[in-house]
Length: 98
Image (cartoon, rainbow, N blue to C red; front, side, top):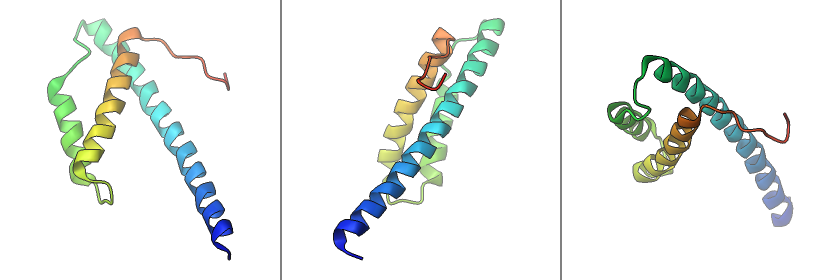
């Protein structure tokens, strides 16, 4: 297989993984919406620093590389921030597929 064909094949695999990641991220955001509804009913704050620390430690320790623990924590910090925004506003965003 030529280098160009190999590169294209690997990029197609990355594209499929990106789509899977997107589906998983949106599934996580839907769960954050559910958590937000529960917290609003209970009048609990959206931000739970102990839970966030647990999540960040958990993903860093579950990481098998090649991403560094620091990189994984940064990625998940962004995910947590965006999911918390979903919890706060409590609304699903329309997507192209809806």
